[in-house]
Length: 114
Image (cartoon, one colour):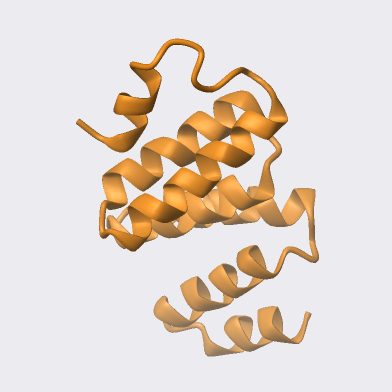
């Protein structure tokens, strides 16, 4: 059982609003720090269910998907985050890293220059 499942089991623990989405993102970071990638991804998805335009949740989920080997999905989440907030450092750095990992150094450098 992931942390997200445990929190959901507590009635009324998290309400459906943007502040609740931030709480899920905070929990995702805790899970991620503990090495629970699946739990962290679940928390990011729950944050996005509450606030679909939350760039932190999109960028973090993108990174987590990338770590799971789901590179195209991870890249897509980071592009979504970038489209919402072109100045979001996490999304820009993630896109630079994804480009570099794919062997596209020029695109990676272009992301870093933005």
